[in-house]
Image (tube, rainbow, N blue to C red; front, side, top):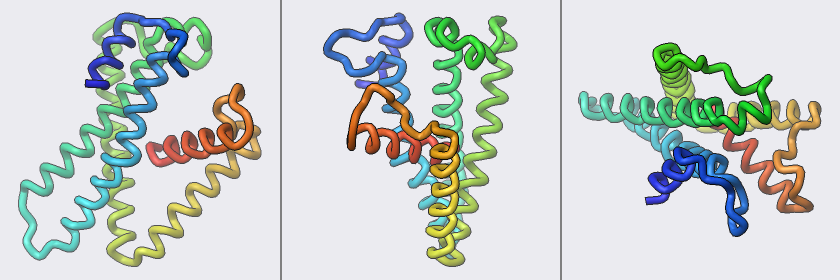
Length: 187
């Protein structure tokens, strides 16, 4: 029910109410990202891992993997689409948002392109993680730690690590680590 409510709030342009912590678009983005990072992406890796180790492989497993990757690609593309087409974001940050054209056919082509590239990226990342896990689980852990560590160092060096400047103390650190970790897993 929550995804439908979030989509309704964003689609109708609902403003942040006093009792809400974040605006509806950010709330919907967080929910989609959490589902992708902690459910869809890990389960895709596990599906590919199981397929690689299976003695008997069927088309149903392959179709399931492809549908999972397509769902992840659609969701991540939809997040980008929602933020780019938000009138508020285009007004507040015009140099960043507005890459999608206003013409419907061009916008659809761009969305399809984003989804295709996301699908290829998801497939490559999940297959590579599953292959590393099959080969040697430690290599997968080293890869993830190095990838995440370099990303965190890059963000810290650019002074771009803390995501919500209005938060303070340990909450600011915890939210920033979770947000940066989630973003990196989706990239």
